[in-house]
Amino acid sequence: MSFTIKSYLKHTHRDIRNLNDVEKRPLYYFIDINNTKEILLIKNNLDHYYIYGAICLTYNQQIIMDFTYYDLIDQLWGYFLNMIEEFLEKKKSEMSFPDQPLPISMHKLSDEYILFSVGFAEWTLPKYEFFNALLTGAKDFFEKMMLLVEENNNYHIYALKKIKNLENKISDLKR
Image (cartoon, rainbow, N blue to C red):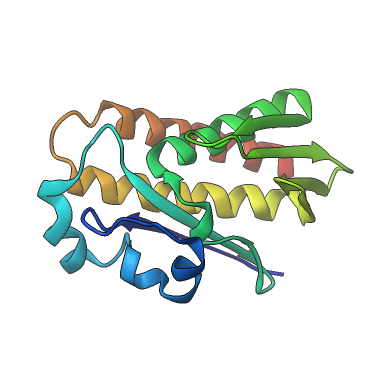
């Protein structure tokens, strides 16, 4: 069982008018957060309050989220952190994407599994592996953003501290 989670920033001067085109040519519209050369080319054009991007998430090569779910990526990663935190307290968590009415939820099925849904699609996922994959993806994203955005990094610093705290809580529960 394996998760793949990658973050992408939307090209600043390439408007999305058709989601079918995004599915066909995602890398025309989006840049892998780890592609430093390309990210630096758009760095000065980023609106630091509205950073659009996509979180691509697969489990055992099954697509859960792809480029068509693009949104305010820094806020979406923050929402995922909040969801994990809430789930650890209440055994369930629900939210919507930051800039669209697309619901996401996590519900406890057992000590090992959760029901994760995006819109009307649902997946049964191994809880600890999923949470660890989300935290690793979020950490990668926020660390890259720290390098990209030199000023006003308070949100990124806060997110990285929250990730560390959640990593500790998850590892304590696993024992």
